[in-house]
Length: 202
Ligand SMILES: C[S@@+](CC[C@H](N)C(=O)[O-])C[C@H]1O[C@@H](n2cnc3c(N)ncnc32)[C@H](O)[C@@H]1O
Image (tube, rainbow, N blue to C red):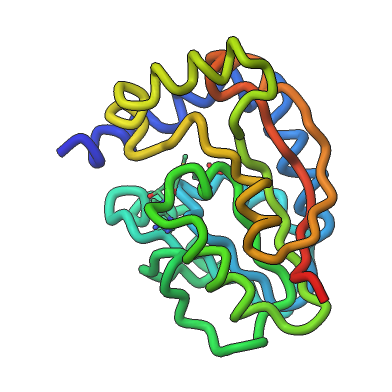
């Protein structure tokens, strides 16, 4: 029930953050997408208009039915929409040039599992482009994120506001180049953002 309501309120609840910089960040990040592209947890499709022309293929995955219904409507004729969690992608090994994850590795149940799966589908030289909110570097804000974890997860459909996602990427064998920025217009517990590119090490 809540997931259906969340799908309805998702875009209105992000509106201020989108106009205060997230839309521009999506646009800048996705200019780097190329070739066969798979987006995980694509939600309602807020990235869709920011993909460059000339991609070989664009596949948007989304496991949540209410989100996927909105996504399918928006993506009609522009991208393929697939029902799949990030932990079990349908793409063959080494077949994808770019994986995109925006505001999703905070929500997947098993980020290590999802990152291993991303590595599996990426071809040699492939990339993960991401925008993720992360655990704060300030002790005070990180403590607040820890205290708010449970109520925030309940409200935001499973989102972990205190997850150190870039550390998890590195622990899973990715080399990461990222900028630390603030998600203006959003609550402090999800304001620390990392925006960048990760590639399988070695
Ligand atoms: C905060 S929304 C982000 C949506 C979109 N990526 C964006 O930038 O607006 C998180 C999304 O992750 C999806 N999600 C939850 N668990 C997932 C999983 N295991 N694998 C992939 N996506 C998942 C949710 O259904 C939701 O659409």
